[in-house]
Image (cartoon, rainbow, N blue to C red):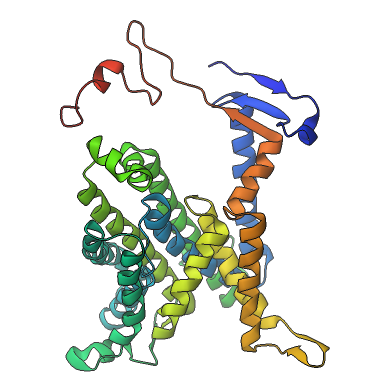
Length: 398
């Protein structure tokens, strides 16, 4: 494979990258491996070096990151404006709680049910997207986010008994590491609280990693590119042979399933489920996390989850009493203005979210040149690698 390294003149001050490398070349692979190495290093340090409550907060950030990832599939990649995904998160959380408390299931046993139920729920909600879009679709999903906590409190059909009504229910099972996990993850000698916090973070981390890889592969695949074309140009997408109805419904279903897994992890993290954890306020907060991290970016979901958790913690600790007639006491409603202030600053300095800022910084150091596929002998190919002979076929024949 050909490789090329070019050192630009003038450094970053001239607006050019320090290093230019072809995609797939050794410098490009080295840069990618370095980034992943730093990520793995932080993932190993977090559970073993931080206090228990911080490790638990990072686990909560992973749960919110999955919820934001599900929302991003619909808003960022398919271009459908949905505000009601918090209902899918609540559905996943309540399914996990009911199956664990009332049926004695383990946590991991509930996830296939959560995925199936939330996928079906999301596909049904995706049906209105076939006829309406934009603000009208947002209004329909907004109604879902508003009514979901109300539905949990209905006394008919035993709903309030199962959900716990206004007070919610505590999850009886505690996620403790088995003997093999204590030995594998070096948990022997630590107190039960530390073992539980570290083991929970590890379980959350690997669950999120698997979901992330599956979603990433979906976005990079041909169906994923079809989803993106729906966002960019629906008419052109339909002309190219994309089944708009099928892709919209399935995308809603997949996004709901991912969000439901995030809600299930959040229920495990909080050890309780209640309507206040999945109300309209959290619907807005998850959207803010999406905007802060970066819409239509995969890594921005985790940044949004981390900001969502730790900004709330920071806001609860803000205190300002220097000016007598303008005091902000700890825990007062004015502390929530921290979210609005950060959102305004990000929108001003990084309109595409934190990931857009990170990409601009990255562009100062390395520029990756696309490396088109090599043409087979006597058979030219298109830019996406499709042989020209195959490209002439209709999508049905292909």
